[in-house]
Amino acid sequence: MIRDIIGYILGLVIFIIAIPFVMYLASGSPNLVQINPVQWILFILMTVSGIGLSIWSIVYMKRVGEGNPFDAFNHEVAPRTSSLMTDGPYGICRNPMLLGVFIFHAGVLIALLSLGAFIIFIIEVIIMNIQVKKEEQRLKRDFESEYVNYTKNTNRFLPKL
Figure (cartoon, one colour):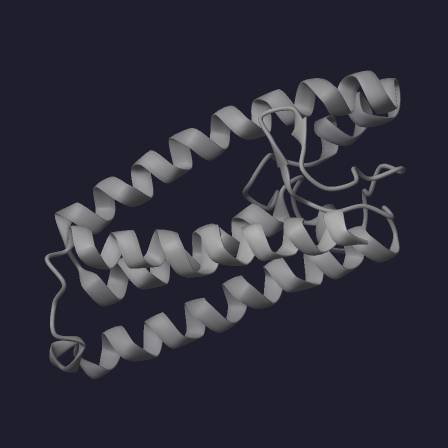
């Protein structure tokens, strides 16, 4: 239970607070009053949908996969899932939690409209791609052909059309 809570707190601090704050700082700490109404609307819509998708994925992971999402570069920070999840949010893409985070951070990027924030976003996407590829190796070991079949039907981040 304690490891679950640590995983959730780390995820909250890193993805919901720290990265957007670093994006804000990299933008030169702009006056948020100067953001135009269209930017605000897009930011709010992307924040609600992105964080909503991430929360749905976390809850689904806990209930169905009986695990916690925080696994950093093959270091189990919180208990890993015991079953492969292929439906619910995981029927959309293999990493719906990260897709939600990326949607939220893209909303932050739209609100800030700065090269600094864009660079932070790109660095995050690169780092998370590396993390996900390492996690995929573990999932192949843990779930074998079931995971390989799942990868044939779902994309890493973007929904299949």
